[in-house]
Length: 182
Image (cartoon, helix red, strand yellow):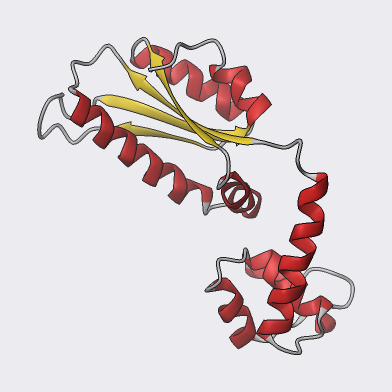
């Protein structure tokens, strides 16, 4: 991430106040957006930058109404998992996907925008099906997370139980749209 801070023709004017940046990050403002807000407000204060960010966001949301993000969990129905086990595995998938979303700025932004969108549970046939769906999602640059169970309760160690996929609804539907709901 460091090299991107220095990019631009006049890197000296790209410096932001690290204390203000940290305060904005504590408000869950994505790092790049926080930096841009600080630069636009000339590093006056974290409060000014936050006001700029949220006002800008309100204005942008009016134009982004057509973009809907979706998080899908595809459950491997070939495994004999009880309802509680499925719920736990979906929880693992959600946390794993959230962690994966932190790897790229665009994915962090997607996670933030998704907050008001939906979650879907769908049926996957078996592990081969989950791997096929994951490969397709990855070919479309969608973030994924595939849970491998520790094998302490109902399924064997290493069993692939749930595939999590997230992205713009239309793209995700290209991967999972034909699957039945759980």
